[in-house]
Amino acid sequence: MVDELRAEQGIPGLAIAVSVDNRIVWSEGFGFSDLEHSVPVTPQTRFRIGSVSKLFTATAAARLFEQGLLDLDAAVQKYAPFFPEKEHRITPRQLLGHLAGIRHYKRNEYINQKRFENISESLKVFLNDPLLHQPGSKYAYSSYGYVLLGQVIEGSAKRDFPTVVQDLVFEPLRMNDTVVDDNRRIIKNRSGFYSYDSEKKQTSNEIFVDYSDRIAAGGFLSTPEDLVSFGSKTAFGDFFKPETRSLVFTSLETLDGTETGVGLGWRIGKDAKGRTIYFHGGDSVGGRSILVVYPESWVAVAILCNLTFARISENDAARFADLFIR
Image (tube, rainbow, N blue to C red):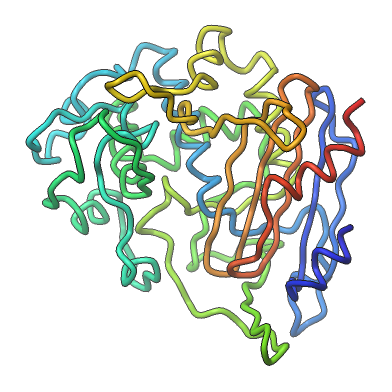
């Protein structure tokens, strides 16, 4: 299955991990992390995970909520006072569920090559833009909403965002291979980033991007092992209090009572066989990721690769989950 998945899309390198009952039962790398130096992918290879990063942000927010430091229904200005008031009130809960009406990237904003030293700087890109709609009235996926959420987390915790996520998420879950994608740092086992021209059958190095403008929305590197450990321990471990776990994995609703299929960060749905899944995918320049958790079976699957626009979805994860679900 893996060779087929790689060959049909020209994926240079890919890694998969599966956990059952909070224990990793399969973890393997395929292909190359670095084509120029023929470096193979291993379970320790760090890939760009794109929007799966949002789950770390949502988890940090949930932990702060548990600690009484974050009011999910307060106005965001309580924690980010310099964010201008809009025509309607915005809350952290709405940001978590993509209900706040904050816009997403414009086409010319997806490729960022400017260095942003902090979240406050990156907020300036959309700070004064009008809302798309009344908060709570519609679901509209927004990475910029999660950038604002990162600022809210900083304000509630009184610490910078990467430190909060490290202290509240990565350290207690022993996610030792998950780090901010910082181009200035030498990061061991970081994958190369590639694109593929299907007509020419040609692989190329991807262009330079800087993810400092969207760390809370899509700016982390990780491994499949870290992701399945994160997914399983948050979904059916004792990491959260039971009431918090229920909050995280219950769909939010619009003002008219329509379920959105999204909880606090996580997407909630059914797979082709009708099994409940919690999941999220992530696209980035030179990376694609998918994390799927099966709460009824206590199984988690993560697939990561180093190719832009790779077509890897929850359906692919299901093919590997089927090998372990009894």
